[in-house]
Every structure is written in C-alpha cells, then in structure tokens.
Image 1 (cartoon, rainbow, N blue to C red):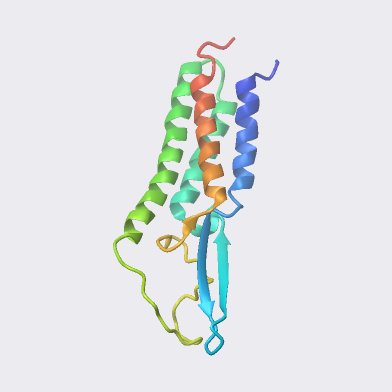
Image 2: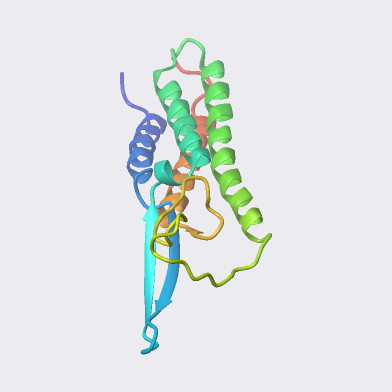
Length: 165
C-alpha cells in the first residue's frame, strides 16, 4: 500500500511535535545590577512545555492522540476517522493557545514591582520556572513551532481524502 502525502506529512509533524515539546516553550528574562558598580547583567531561563504548563502538556498529548488515531484508524470508516481527528486536533490547538492567552490575561492584572529577597528566603528564585505560573515570562520559539505543528496535524486531517479504498 503506497504512503499518501497526508500520511507522510502527518507522521513527520507528529515526530516533530514530540521533539519540539522538549524545546523552550517558555522563557523568563530578568536583569541584575551590581551594587556599587552599576554593572547590569541580563539573564534568561527557559522551560519545555512539559516543565512549564499542564495546559501545554495536555495540548501536546491531545495532538499526539489525534495524529496516532488518524494514522492507525481502520480505513473502513474514513468519515469517523476524519471527524475524530479534527475534533481532537482542534481541541489540542485550542487548549494550547488558550492556556497561553489565559496566562497573558492574568499577567496584565498587576504591575511589576521591585523586590529585595535574601538568598535563604522561601520564595522561588528568578531563575526558577514554576509550573503553571506563566504570568511573568514570554512564549519561547518552541511554543510557536508546537502550535504550527498542531495546526499542521489539523490541516492534514481536514485535507485527507474522504473516501479511501
């Protein structure tokens, strides 16, 4: 049986999404100023989708389930195959983007403040990314690639032949 273009693209997008999920999806940047000299140092730390957000992890799992279901679904019922894949792939993209939009809305609720913290205080350090606390950072390039790959999986499901032999 020949491999169709949609199956090939879906397979490549699935593997690429797995790889992309371990790339930087979330980045926090901050700067420090040395007392006395005024020397400013820029810092950044990043986290993968798995380490940064439950919503992003859920979106990735849904996208992988959609692609796996589409690739493994029996060909006797192509309508069910397409419908199920479209619904799950759309849910994956909506969950992923919705998680980021919710974090952005929450971050605009308060202003930034300057805080002096001793090194032994029981608070997260600036270089620690706390899972599901995405309000102060920015989306990394892995996030944008992941959303693009999720939309590719959705497009493959939508563009697949409705009637397969």
